[in-house]
Figure (cartoon, helix red, strand yellow):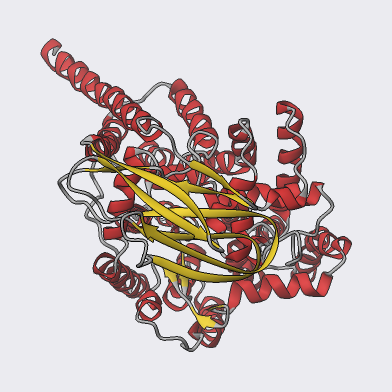
Length: 593
């Protein structure tokens, strides 16, 4: 007996040690992400303006390199009707390696390819702006740091996953270090564009600018095209962040970096990067972090899931990515949807419909359960009245903004029409990404044609056969993913808890893995570092290695098989649910034991 206890203790210490190793490896990789470069941006002045070149230092190595680019931003003292910009190698001024004409601009931005030298050296170029020459330099440094830091990063993820899944956290206090870790991650990490979008919405409201429609103060890429309830929290959190950090409210014009106006919306942060930015990140994500724990509570206490099932929710890399690091509205929508399902199962259709509609005004997904609640309701008139009353605050927000019809139109159009500037566009895990990437400019919006008929059919089946409403909502989501042209990684955070409620470990794992893989293939890790710590996420050694990796992994060679496999999984899962069958490969494992 003592020998068995000793072995258990050793196993326990081993898994705890894996977590410690993961933290150390991640810290080393994070250090490389923020250090090692001599400087991130070189600035140059000329008669009539200035320009910046970033990154000014390129890290290369002999294994897996590609030809990088330098990004040039030119600021002019006044608006100029015609600007001719060219780039020449200093030893070949007769043949430009870049040349473009810009019209009616006071700011312009472009990039040009760099020829990687065989040995470490400094490459010099001339940038000509309307005939004025500026001499710039870019340094090349051979270094194993980028590859080493990325390997370290990936090893830290593997070690952390092994440790947290198998370490026997039995104390009720185990949730405390998880909560602290969540807060740290929320403050120092976040997808840059989406976080700017979330935070800038509140800053615009505080500045008296209508965030719902495009204007001189808001480019089209930054207008608020989601339902309005989170915007209220964005406004409150921005006010509190400014109060706590003594950061003055930026003017609308200074909030938008000029490059955003010509389509470079991923550079939006360059207009607003206070050193206190982690506070803004943290407060903006409070509803998301609370939603992760709220779902944990529902799964454990209300849906009576086993401890290990709730553990793989709270410690899931996918949940941490979307709910804590990325900070997406979908995790809030997931909490409202699960709460609505719970009260529907308790035959409290009044509370179920209230939560469904309020959740809809945060992110539309909770409305998926609405028709099933209404079918089950024994007091349909009362519940419809609750739906209307709970929508009044949203209507008032639109009304008081002053452009009610335009704002509603923007939200409906932005959410339902699969075009980008009039051209068919798809992204994420949708199989239609293949159509979009093949350059087909027009493709029928099959979601608009098929989803409503499918939902009506599903409702008819539910009306006559009833059964577990969770399966109907899962089918609804899966068909949505099958027909909609946007299936972003965050969307699946609303689906996967439904598989946990069904104790369907296989599909929970599969549909958590797909969005994780997509995020890894498409995004640089350093893109998630808060901008006040690393303004240019490609300038660090790790960042430039990540640029190489994402250049390779976001290609059709990787994306096409992934979206095809996802689509097949969706179809197979729909068939299995329709036949009332499931894969039980993981049942009886440590996750369910």
